[in-house]
Image: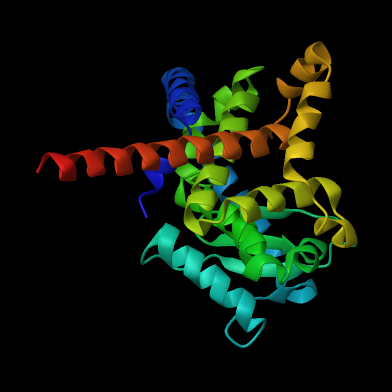
Length: 273
């Protein structure tokens, strides 16, 4: 699967802007700081190494690593999505953590190793639904962050200074979430399960999950106060879930229209012969 074909158009724009601004800022720092910059870079490297070791100590000691011997069905989902999105690269180390009711998932990378953290309540909520395609959507979304380079150390180092610029940093972050949604949905190929997986993040209810009305949820977006919705969005690192679901639905509609047009054009060609 070619990840770049699923990348959201806004991410191309914001990433380029952040890379240019980041390069200019880093060039200025290097010019004025010169070799003195090596000291803070070495310190950053040491801090990252120490942070990962503490992170591993917490994860391996207080959560469950997903492997062929542990949660085999979930491990198959991780390996399957990793193969599609990462190719021959090793799957991320995936852990299930006790979320105490929280529904979320995370993609993390330090200097080398990739991680996917799955909250236990979210796994319970989505387990078994639509042949696990809803859970697959969540797993694929996190792996998509790794596949799309969102956790790449050097890219994040380059764009880092630009992330502190008001509006630009959050906008770039939101576009990456939309990219991960698109990549995951393209990988899962179950539009309904993909959208319901996102709505599950909003409701968090196992009992109500099966009663989810996607269209009714989308219509909530119309009731978001325009000004205050805009003010909240420009500082948010994630798009609101109503917009994420709408983005997937609109993309599915466009894909369906394109497929129908292709079928019609193919029929016309046959008639001409």
